[in-house]
Image 1 (cartoon, helix red, strand yellow):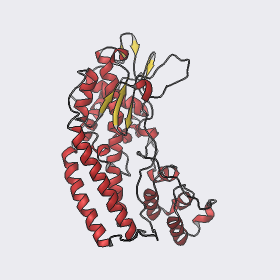
Image 2: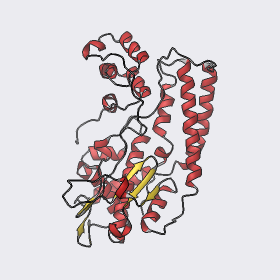
Image 3: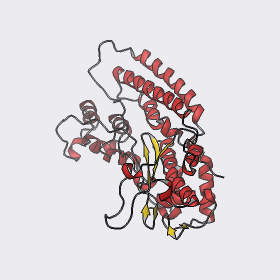
Image 4: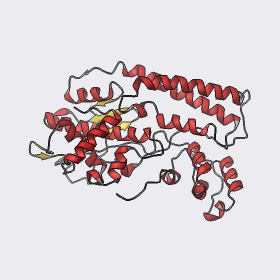
Length: 358
């Protein structure tokens, strides 16, 4: 993986759950992907017509399907699964699995829509409304920008995409109004999340695991001891492993088995820190938009054995200042103890994304 370049536009065009707005954005700057966009399930008639007008040859490259109604994209964030982790932390007799929805961002279409609701505001009014929402959003984001999961909490990736597409062709007056409405919805959700976090900053259970999560998320990350119902079962049915933890993004939650099933104090800390790292990596990716986050770049360069799971292990090992993955005669993690150089890179990355690091 070390020498490869990850083409995020290509990956999005091949992802069946990429949102219409993102497809339109890709189409405006990537003519080489027009054929893929035309064959995408979310390519709507106006975008299809525009592509065929500006690039008639695109329709002949691939067999363009008949126009059909595309199902609404699933909620959740599109992912660089191979780079930022689809798995979990393993141990002898146990395993942790990271679960998240791989899907497209729900966003409004930035391309021509000939149907306009009666009473739609003028383009100037919609742009002014969007600017007002952006100002409010920026003020709210400034309150949480030092939180390691702030990009996820604020749905930063979606908001930045709205900022890019609102003024790019093809965008009609109706689409501009939709963008303003979407911006207002994101801002209102962020306001509510900030309010909810204020009531979730205390270690209600008094547990080691919740104390770590509270320190990391400052109320924006929840914790639940329900891995048996919320996390998938790893490996084969008869390989003796069970799931002891995972994460979800909607809402941001670390799901764990009861602490008495996780092992001793150090093992508990290792498991929780490993899972939190996956949230930090997702936030790192979202904060960089179309570019790879620093964590993904390091993995791509071959550090941490080219594995996001080893990366998560190294964060936990560096945080705890230990050089073993064996506790109480059980082997946790992925069997690799990161080097001094990798630990220094980890500390630099943690400082960059505001992840806790003693």
